[in-house]
Image (cartoon, rainbow, N blue to C red; front, side):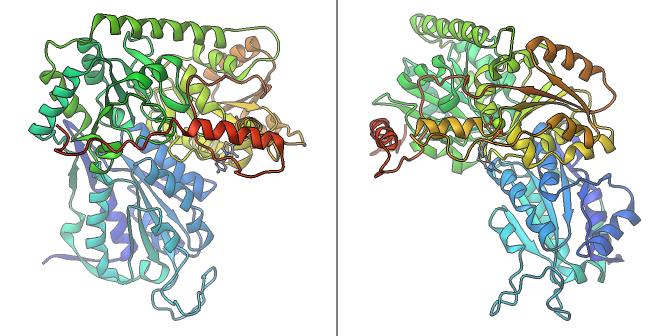
Length: 614
Ligand SMILES: Cc1ncc(C[n+]2csc(CCOP(=O)(O)OP(=O)(O)O)c2C)c(N)n1
Ligand SMILES: [Mg+2]
């Protein structure tokens, strides 16, 4: 057997370089590069290997949590076909990645994490930053990553590496299992030599298949849809990852079945498609939520059916509701008692379209849908139209949307912006809307925007971020500037947590602990990181600043003050946030009474009983 004598870290890097991912007729390197922050736990191992090998692009981010967001955003924008590896030192560098790992796993997005770890030999224990739990010598802080990873391993001997790498690649590229994949690398083992089999370093292609639905399940699903009087399709992120938006558009156009979108699925339909009802659920449009309420058959495609999408299980009220779960992951396909259609979204939608040939919804139902679509367009116009004076957040969204080109990408994650964007942003391209709303992580926005721009450098990337999120993590502005990556960031200063402040007031708690007393000069803050800065006091000023940002040679941050009290309402929806059952505060007691009323509409959604699902 031919072998190569290398350190464990050198072998790891040489392996990553030659991994490829393939789907349909597209084949790309699985790893776009490595994001890494060095410390004593990885500088002499992985760091030395990266420098010596030299083939992988290396980027130096400013924060380990941020670098995982960047990698995750890249993978999302590339429909899970490509990602980055992230290397950290031991201790705090590694635990800083826990939040990013959870983002990846919750959103089912592939990322490879390579935290350094304490000496496997234990000869210097305790090493700097070692946890030391008396009685558990094998425990390290990296165990916290195991809780949020789909695959977790620790390479305690150099010869363990090949088997671990093969399994890690399988999980990264398995559409049903993907998420954070962590291989912890003890710092002594990284530098140890071993005679690795030469074939480990031969190019390898990981093929992403498009599994079709089982024939009987397909027939049952088609029969359910044919029998439906008020069918609805719910489009989730899986529609986009599977590159199925054309298939969905076609199915909707031919059958007239309306489509509502989750946060991850927004963009599956162009906003002006006659069947596009827009956002569903807690942050949904009036039309989508009313149609969902009365729908008798719901085809849920590529969605986790989280509480925002289902309005905490109040969205669907039809007494004989039947759900069909088209999902590549059996786990998701079976949710809420659905008839499971375990398949790739594009393959499944194609087969459903064939099975539904000649079928069309009742014309009366089509008219109801068309009326909702028209009505919502007017509502968006009303809320987002330009006006004089200090703008509302909806008007800011309108301005950014009007100034954008169809292929531009808007990026956001937490606060009140996601709900408003879900309702109001007019998406014209399947990949034009990038929301991290599975984990809704404050601090994702700028770091994620960087990942999106790295993934699609030919598209304009518009990051929308609240002041709270900005203060939590804006460090990657410096990375964007130093890497020559141009972002346009619109920062909404509403003096604190507009979203949670509003929620708190609606629950009787008067906004306690959600407002900033101290003003921050965000423009000066952004300028200090190297960005071009502007302040916009009106919609007209914002539009002018957006134009300049597009032509600028580096990242721009535009700060807009908004009054949090002038927010967008909610439309026929609810979100379950439990209110104190007993309280000395009358406002809380009133909120509790309202809460109990709403909870009566919650449904267990366990599916049919008896002779199965057909
Ligand atoms: C890391 C993290 N911590 C806490 C939260 C809970 N949370 C959700 S929105 C929000 C406030 C966000 O403030 P800001 O970015 O200013 O947006 P706004 O609510 O004002 O629109 C908080 C604290 C979160 N989503 N993420
Ligand atoms: Mg705010």
